[in-house]
Every structure is written in C-alpha cells, then in structure tokens.
Image 1: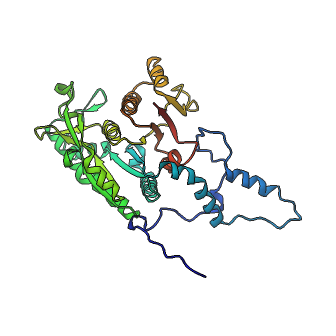
Image 2 (image 1 turned 30 degrees about the vertical axis):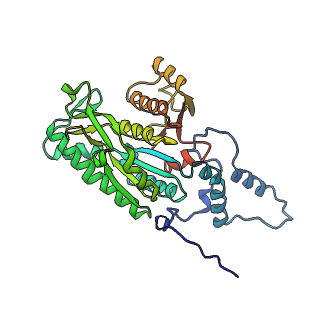
Image 3 (image 1 turned 120 degrees about the vertical axis):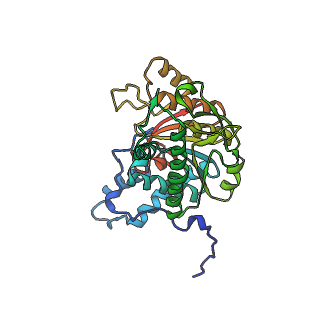
Length: 345
C-alpha cells in the first residue's frame, strides 16, 4: 500500500470533535429551527435502512461512517464560505455558560481549520459588573447603555482587554487554533468619538473610523483575531464601545460575507409573545416594516440597526442567532436550517 505524504498546518493540529454515539444521530433534532424543509441525506439513509428486507444482509451504520456522512453533507457550505470573512459578536448566555463557551470556541476553531476566516468581537458586561461591585462602585445604566465615568472606564478596559480577551485567546489556543488578542486601540483598528448623549453616558463611544489593516495579515496567516470593544479617540481618550456596533463596523470595513450576533433569544419573532413565530429570513425592507409596526422593540432594535447598517455597507448577510443552542455557529453557517434570523440586503 502506498501512503501519500501530506502537509498539515499547525492551526489544525486537532479538530474539536468529540467521540460520537449512535444516539447522537437523530434525523430530526428538536432544537434545529429549519429555514428549509428539505430532508437531509442522513434522514433518507435512515429511512432506507429501515426498509431493507429481512432476507437481505443487515445494514449497520458505524459511528465512523456516520461521521463521514456528516462531513460530506457540510462540503457545499465549506466550499461556499472557504476564504470568506465571518465576523461573530460573542456575548450573552454563550459567554456565561462554560458548556456554551466551549461550543463557541470549538466552532470557531473548526471553521478556521476548514478555510473560513472568523473574527471574534466580544463584550463582557457581567464580568465588568462583578469587578465594579468588588470595588464598591454600583453599575449604572442609561437607556440600556452603561454609564461610564472615569473609574468605570478603567475597569472596563482592564476587564475586557486584560482579562476576558486573554482568556478567550487561551481557550482558542487550547482548542487547537491560534488566536491573536486585540482591542480597538491596537493599530488604530477603531477610532472612537463621544456619543451625542455624552453628558449622561460619559466615556461611551461611537465608532468614527475603522482601519482593518492589522486584521488582514492576521487572517491571511490563519489566525483568529479576538477583539475587545475598547477604543480611543484622536486624542487617546479611552471609550467603551458597544460590542454589537463594533462588530458591525468591522464586518463592513472587512467586506465580510456574514455578520453573526450571538444573543439570548431565538432570533426575531413575528409575535414577541410567541416563541414559535421565529422569522427565519427577511430582507431590509421587511425588517424596517417590523420595526415600524413595533414587532421589533426594546434591546432588539439596536441589534437590528447594527445589522441593517452593516448590510448597507456591503456585508452579504447578517444573522441574529440563538447563542443558547449548542454549536449554533455551525448550524448557522454549515446548514440550510440556520440557528436564528438571517437578514439579507
């Protein structure tokens, strides 16, 4: 037998798959919110197995064969997105749960290993609150945004840049990827300016300019940028920037294929009181109509506005997905069904 010699990249030293069990292969998983009703080849295969005549030899699918089938079904999606930039905003329940955090990290490493170019943008609100309380400083909010005085700004920068960012970098490296930790200040990636409501909010910033030059060589070398949403203005003053906003502006500047916001809800609902009314796909005009009809309200409005703004600047699609679902990133990118709401231009 002749063995072909292959060359592997250190980034893909190991893929983040766990051992598979026969019970893992339910052809109709209940957590999968399908955009498409097309039956999967796995389901068809399972149906064919059950109708094999008793007189025939039994057909038993081994765990190894099942794994190969799953990978084979992913091929069209991998081919479609290979070499494309995917910007992911990470926060919410997926950041607070160790199990969900591991799922997100493994998904990012897998996507990088198969040729996609993921960029991770993160916040860290609960961690900031915890450290403020340790210092005896009560967190304050105004219109849903953190009031950021000088002390709070110091804590925000220390926690996001020094603690949360480096923790995520370490987790990605441990999972077999190679991550590079950055914040908006590095290489002037993000330049901030005060918000119009600066008198009430303090050092809360908007994104005035994005220079993605630092990200291109990082991605070209197969690394995963991990970006904390702290930036500075032209004079070097630090600002706390909303992570959704930062992710959207970075996606636009990079000409990203997809912007994905991980949230604590299923996505955009046609009826906010009906969790089964998920809107799987909608265009900009449709989402604007839902906002006008007040079907989209509260904390979902800034997320929707972030998505619409990024689409208007050239991002192909923007998705608001359920970060509480394990491997929601893979469901969104490598399946027809998705894991939330996809907004198109």
